[in-house]
Length: 396
Image (cartoon, rainbow, N blue to C red; front, side, top):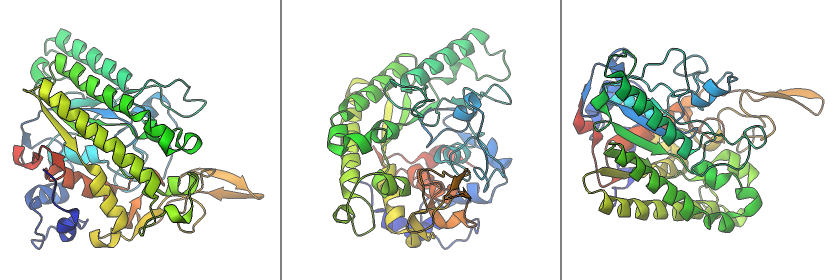
């Protein structure tokens, strides 16, 4: 079953806490509840079928795991919502943050964060630069995180063992019966796709994609064996539209579509997403008492890149936080928040003053404004297969 065209929701996807009744989007009540409620009200007063969320992924859903392991994050990250760096690769909240808040749950604490964490409603094993497959290099050489999906799964197993052994007597851990009731979200694979894309080319990288998809499917089955039953698996966003890759990856003008995105690389992403969807269909046949959703964030994100102004934004393929100006405002040598001497002068990659008008935050990751729109498209169920309206399971 194909989701309805994203364009049908354009006027209802406008960002901002105006809380008017003009929208025709079916998620009005849920969006309004998150938009207008105080942070305290949206952080745990709601009732939802899912009492906890356990997340696995990369920087698209990392709420502080990488920076807990390697403390160094600086501003302007976190400037919009948190007012400080908060371990997220954005100016504010991520899709997983909006999902947690819409469910009436606190923002997820990173598994690796030892100070100030509260795991009563789940944990987040995602870390920036993580891959599905076990890396064969070091974070200090290539920047790839050591916390691959397999390591994150092992973290989950250890967490579960600690919870079970606590017998519900640890005030910072969930109840032992929570694991079969929780929602398990998986948003990873982009770094496997892009890490060698420039050197190998898209056709070569495509040959490795079946092993990545298979690993995700095996991980779901492994989680199922320890009691997990509810899964949301996100597909890959159109990396051919990202300012960083438009700057770094080899291509010519003939490879650009009418929206300025690279057709060849987006075609590779589409191939990956087809493999993932087909693989999850096979897993459903094996685990018939489990709910396994394929979440199509690709369609939503692509629509934002192609028609930003239709959704209350202004800039699609231009980074808010970057250096160099021009079409993309991205320079791989002067990354967001960093400074470097260029031609004898200090160059600093600073943030724009209006991130709410951008799809791309730093050339690689989305702004809070874009994440908000993606999250509520996901929550509506219109972009998942099988269709699943998460909002109907929760009450504000």
